[in-house]
Image (tube, rainbow, N blue to C red; front, side):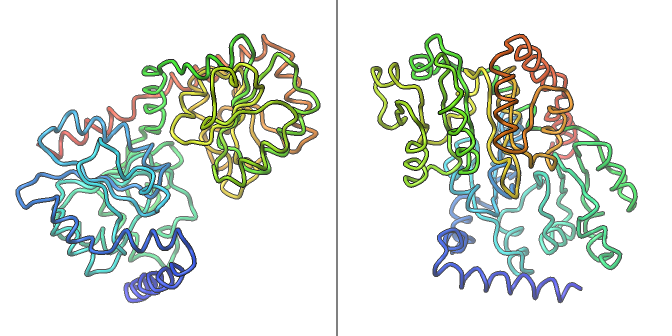
Length: 414
């Protein structure tokens, strides 16, 4: 099976190299890995003590960020290296100043795995949520370098639960510690003989608590909102925007305003969104004090500020509920104690399910359902307060996952 795995890895690398000729994301993936060993050697010396965190993409980075920040404060004499598999993570966070070295994870060949461990020589690898690369884990095991997985959610569909995957289960069993989000994940790991498991919850709760505590004023939002109620529609896709625009144009009361933060901020999508709205709109990149006051809609054609904007919302709409991957981050608005509403594809995310179950969030199935449920939210301020309190309490009652992880790290790194 090892031969088949390595053949698959090589075929994947070949496919990406072909795709890079016409696919920008594939080109970033390929270009970012060129001369990776030389780049690493220019930053990491043989004398450095290194802690390594790997994130698949941007979402995993945000999950791992509270741990990264704690590592930097508790181990100031170590270098923190952060790797990504996906360009959507690396390209957004490549300038993150909380790490000493940020890089693309090389293709998981035996040769690359050996070179990577020799060059980076980490004292510990922390995998955020998932991505179990066979050759990498095998070489780390041979080098006796501890591996910890954090914020993991284990599903029965994982490769290592297959009857024919004993070779892969052996590698997974060599991981030193799993910090999982729920009891079901612990039970599944126990079922294949892995008992070094701690149910610690999700570090993303720690992250949003930090956002809540460190939230600062956004003057442009205050000038836009004034005394109005505010819907913040975050990470919206075209399907979300059609439903929102139809409702806004027909039913939104005059004393309500809307801030849109599209998932894709390309010019075509921004123009399409503005063209759907009946009323004055202003883009973040073109705003003035006068335009903010007189406009009913503000479109954030920038990234990185949505989490802070949610703090001003009366109702938070979270986009992605009509995509295959599902609804986007529901914790960021929930921590500010406001009711949430989102589309039908949310059940892959346990926090979204929990928020619905606690009546902190409302899910809808189509435009007609959205109209009915949005009218209820807008018209009943007491219900909004109750839903918002339920959302806030849900976040605050979660354990400090980061501290549980750090207690373990302190046993490994002296």
